[in-house]
Every structure is written in structure tokens, then in C-alpha cells.
Image 1 (cartoon, rainbow, N blue to C red):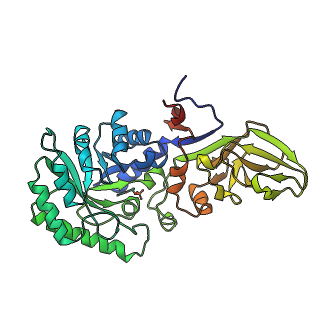
Image 2 (spheres, helix red, strand yellow):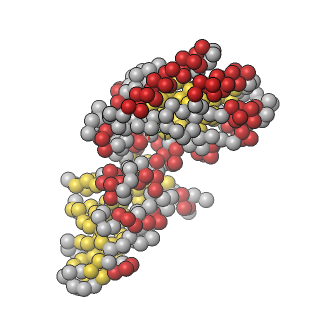
Image 3 (cartoon, protein in one colour):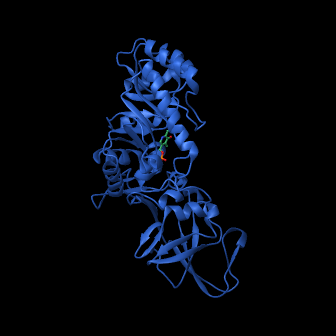
Length: 390
Ligand SMILES: *Cc1c(COP(=O)(O)O)cnc(C)c1O
């Protein structure tokens, strides 16, 4: 049995050509910056490995993930480019990072002290990126004193190389944010302090997608691209002022597994919340909340069939949901839940708005149960079916 084959009637299509276009657009927009492709959370649901390879082929030089496991998975699949783990790893796993040439994020002096106990016999250095909290309030070194202590400790800890220093913006996706400018200034100030302490990292980075789109001024030489590499805008506010078009890479499809005619008064799904007013055609799609097609999307969400927008009716179940059809259709008819059919389009942002969230969350939540079909150079290049991937 081919572990990449899939047998269900629901799939996500990942257009790697669009990811490539987006990375190239950023290269043209920021010719002096290196690109770090952020492929955490299985590439925001787009496939970490395939996205990483495509981004690298298109001009990215670095990769970033949230945790060590994600970095090790990429190494196992043969990815050899530099990878940064952006969350904290446990000090005792430091040799795993060294052996696999994975750079790690540091924001505690205690971490350096603890980790150094595990490093003494290492042949290769540990590459670290020092994370500064300039206003995000999540993780990072805060204030001058902490910065001094960390810098001195880094300098005197053997086997540790300060490869990078970075910070993260909390409000880069809001045009009139004062905090954004304050964070930028604080970061530049802290970089000055590091410099006087003799710390001269190769990589200095602050920008996520939003900051990269609007450009941040400063001595930075790398941007960390996540959401907009996948063709999605970091916020609705920014969507109106994008410096170049972003091409959505993720689309979601299913096909009818059942078609029936309801009579007036017949009901659909749990709770019998949908009641037919007249004779009407209803189709069943094999996708539900266990696939990440959230229950709260109905009523409200539509699907595209034969180029028409059709409403999902009744409650979304774990594995299935129902669509009202304008006429009888055949079992096997394709439905697009996110994406384009003829002149109609359902964007990720439409689904995010119905789910009362941001576009980031939607592809992340499309579960491993939904196989991914990758399109590269205009053709299907491979499938990923995690369920059969034993
Ligand atoms: C996820 C993440 C990014 C990417 O942000 P986008 O808004 O998706 O571009 C950048 N930096 C850090 C620290 C992150 O955690």
C-alpha cells in the first residue's frame, strides 16, 4: 500500500507555485534582507517539508520552527539548511540540537548555565539566537541589566556562538501603532548595548510578515516570513495596503457522497435546526469538525459547486456536513470549501471571519486527517497522508 495515497473524498490542495511566487515577491521587495521561512505547525498546515523546500528553492536561506521536534523532523527528511527553533528547548536536549545543527533561541541566563553543563564534550558549537522582549510580553530578555548579564555569560560560555539577536513585534499589523515604533527603538537601543559589550551576531532580525510588508528601518538583515509566504495577509487592515499581491496557496475540497430530495418539513442534522420550507435537494460532504471544519461555521459558511455559492445547512457533524443544492447533482460532484471555482472565490479570510478568528488559525486547524495534495510547476507533485504514514 502506498502510504502517500489517500482514499477519502476530502483533501487540501497546496499550491507550492504560489508559495514560490510570494517568496520571490518578498525578495524583490526587500533585496537586502535574507529570508527565514517560518514553517512551524506543519507549515501553518501547508506541509512543513514541502513548504521549506519550495521556500529555499525560491530564495529563502533560513528556516524557523517553534520546537525541536519540528526541526528534527525536517532534518530526518533531509533538509540541510539552517533551522532556528524559536521556542525554548530544554537545556538537557542541547546536544541533540548541536548534533543536528539546529540553532536555538535563548532568553534566560539560567538556561545558559544549565545548558553549559551538557555542552562540555561537544565538538560542534551551539548556535544561539538571543531573544529580546521589547514589548511583546511573551518571552525574551527584558531590560539592560538582564541583557548585560546574558551577554557576559554568552561570551564566557564555551561552545556557544551568538549567531543571532531578535525581537518580535506585537502590533506590526496595525498601521497606526505606537508600540510598533517603540519596540523598534528599544530593540535598536539594546543592539547598541550588545555591541559595546563585544557581541556582534551575524543575524539581526525583528520582522514578521506584517513588518516585512511595511518594511522596518534599522540594522536588520533577515526577516521571518510566515503567514504572507502562504499568501495570506497578516490582518484585514494590511490587506488593503499590500505592496504587492499575495497568492493564497491553500485550498480545501471535497465531493458529494450522497444526494437526496427533502420534502417541506424535513429536517437536517443534529438538533434538527434546519427545516426544509419546500421540496429541495441536499447533498452530503464527507468533512466535519474532526477535519478542522469547525462546527461554528454553520450556519453562515458556503461551498462552491459548479461555480455557484451554496449554503451549508444544519449543524456540522464530526465527519460530515450538508449543503443545499439548487438542483439534483451527482454523487462525486466536487465542492470547494476554500478556494476558487470559475468566477467565485471563498477566501481564507471569509472562513476566519465566520469562525471569529484570524486567517492563521484556519489552515493550522485543518487536521492531519485531511490529506494534502501538492501542486508544483502546475502539476501534482506529491500527496501527504499522515494517517497512512506508518
Ligand atoms: C510565528 C512567528 C513568526 C511568523 O509570523 P507571521 O506573522 O506568520 O509572519 C515570526 N517570528 C516569530 C517569533 C514567530 O513565532
